[in-house]
Length: 182
Image (tube, rainbow, N blue to C red; front, side, top):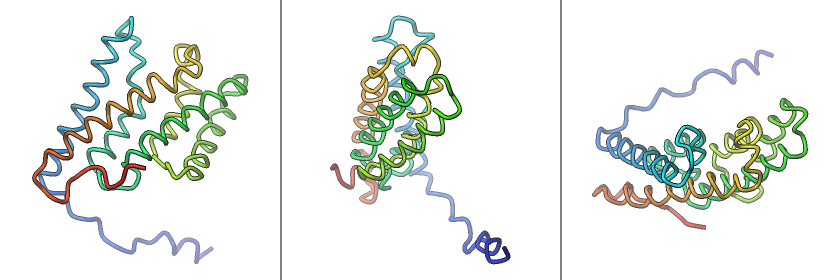
C-alpha cells in the first residue's frame, strides 16, 4: 500500500505558462472554430435553439487543435477518426442498450477508447462524442447513425479546416499543423 501511495507523489514542477503569442493563437483558433461550427449549424438546422451541429466534445477538440496543435491527439487522423469511430460506437450502444442508460454510458465510452486505440485514432474528446450519443436526449437519439455525419463529421471537419488556417498563419516555425495526416 505504501508503494502504491508513493507513486502518487509529484516528480516534477508545474511547467511555466505558455508565451502570450501561443495563448492568443489558441484563443483566435478556438473562437473561430466553435463560432463557425455554430454559425454553419444555425444556417443548416431548422431551429437555432436545438442546434445539433455543435456538440460539447468539440469544445475539448478546440483545446487540442488550437491549444496543442503538435500533440498526437490533435492530428487530423486522430481528430476525424476518433470522433467518427466514437460516434459509431456510441450510436450502436445507444440502439442496443437504451433500457440501461448507466451501462450504455460506460460501455460507449470504454469501447470507443478501445476502438480508437485499435485504429490509432485516439482523440480524448471522442469519449465525450460516444457518451453524447447515449445521453444526448431524444433529439440526438432520433438522428441515429446520421449523428456520425452531422454533427460529428461535419463539426470535426470544420474544426480541422480552421485549425489548418489559424495554426499555419503564425510566423512561429514551431507552430504548424498538422504534424502528420494519416
